[in-house]
Image (tube, rainbow, N blue to C red; front, side, top):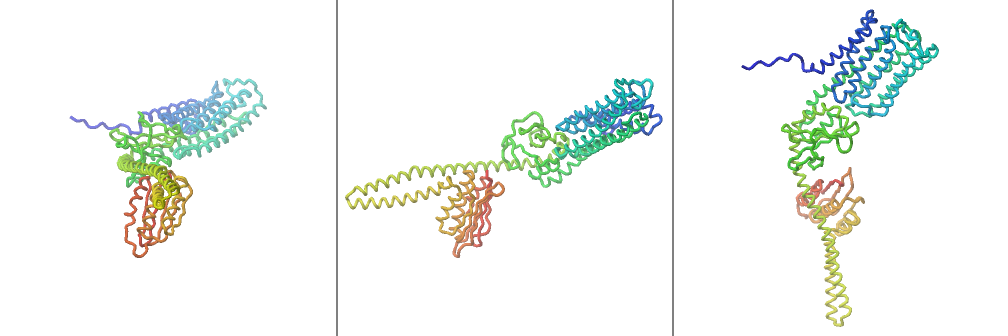
Length: 605
């Protein structure tokens, strides 16, 4: 017999952490009720507001303490709620309650402020944060100490007979001066805290700033309002009710902090829930570039990089299919990038695996996104199918890249062979022919036989013609000018031999040997086609750099009448293949009778 599924008794969000937070909130509210009971009996509305404030701060603190990055902030908020509850012990006007109250109030604001400075990264990352924290400890602990050392309890609003107040050096005038100095220090501390909060925002990542901005505004307002509301009670011999009334106002204002924290958390949760729809919209139709750009947009990280696992390569490749070395596989999904620590200013990598556990991709993000791991995971899960499809596309690109790499090796080998052949022709055959010519000249000079002299002269003439042809062949194989001076001088020599009007506009910048050799041979073949195939009368050749790429253009006029029809793209297939082998492009526009433009585009490196 199959039993019916058990009905869930509580909603999914009401888990162990939530129940623990509510219990903590109720406990702190009860502590506040007990600590301030003498005042609450006549002020029930103030009691409700204060208990709600303490409970809200405690609940938010316990919830934040469950996160690895927000644990310290959560613990400080939970402690702050206890401090604020203990602060109300002043209402008993007896024993140690009055002297504990100013320290509890100081610790309350200190814990709240430092907790916000720790949020959401979990540490005091900036120098200003650490300096302000040290100053706050001195001011918030030093001022209450100076107050009770220089005063009698009656001067500080406490008139109970059993008040424990160890006034070491009571002096009314000194006490009034301490009150004024303390009020000024509290105000300066609040204003400097607002400045520190504002200075942090530009240095945060976008997602961090979205989280921290509402909390920053709330805590800044709380701090400044606390300083201003504290000033009226920094007077001698004020009534206790006036002091407690200010506490009520301060506690009511502080509720803004847990409310903004809850709102920020809700905003992040909504972003996680909506990321799936955004990923689907941004990645349709699926392509490698669209997936990378979609992740950059959703995660607000324009520096995000994406690499895919290529089983045929046995490693990772980039979005163009080129192999990349990401180091050995690690056991975890996350690791720091080699160029910096995984922090606010560093990088970190997240390894993505497929449904069966095999490697799928690696995403490199800014270190600040470590604080938003759930959002990153939601984006990657939502784009899982698209990542699988993109990996297949990248696999094809990787295969094509292997072909291109093989072609590039052939181009390099061809360039090296051309250079070797030109060197052998210059150092070997040409030198031998020159030596033979010198020997024939000597024979012609020393012989007395007219027939021998005439025969030697004829041989020297033939030898000179052969030497000229050999030199021309060596220049075509690998001109020395190309190696020594670059494309410009080498193409000038080619243009002079064509017998056609050729205008050259060549950059003086030097490129790598394989790029210059490939461009030279491609331009020579294009010029040869322009003269012999298109019968052009005017040719313009431009070579320059545009946006990190070398661009060459050959423009020629229409063919002369009687020139045979030809297909420029087919006739120039050879140089086009060599250009593509170096990850370049070659475009042919027009036709032999209507004017022709050939554009070659290569990466400079």
